[in-house]
Length: 241
View 1: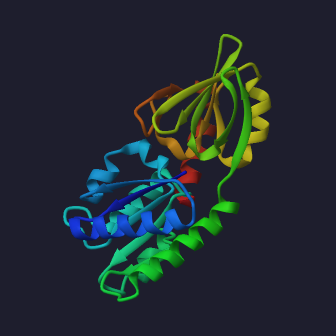
View 2 (view 1 turned 30 degrees about the vertical axis):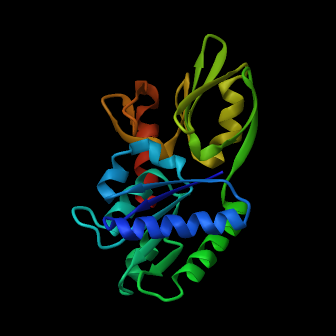
């Protein structure tokens, strides 16, 4: 299922884009959920819950927090979300490149519906190879998870607990060793910050006081022996994005 967010402080354009998306995805026989937000600030306040959306349509010229700043804050949390700028202007190409926007849609374009359809086709095509999913055999049953939705994995009482952002925060459990998962998930940005914690580095907001603070406010202990290496990895990652 597609989950799409639209951020625009003009209600008319929010509703128009929503109607076009529903029309296109209905013809494509793709289920979707579309939520509208009246400002970039309102969307950013979702925090970690933003990652449940596959695509966000951002009006560039919003008050209080414009689309460019909103996009930068989105990229602090997710590299995978597709960002589409909706604007009445065409002079934001460089800023769009910096946040890896997939398209610009011009509001006053007479072919707006056609360009939106082309945009959705491009996103659907790219999702086939950009989204990384894996099957896990949980005690709750086998599930296919988007790896970017996993915040962290905790080893507890001979079981592993997966803390996953879906429609809401979920916890799935399995019998396995964290050492094994560390090997298989390292290339996807998961780092071992503690004997009991394997964390998706993109959700670490900061490292301080021998703790890793995640974007949803959870604080996980980083032992002294690992502190410098974990902090160095975090600094390197933040520098890269």
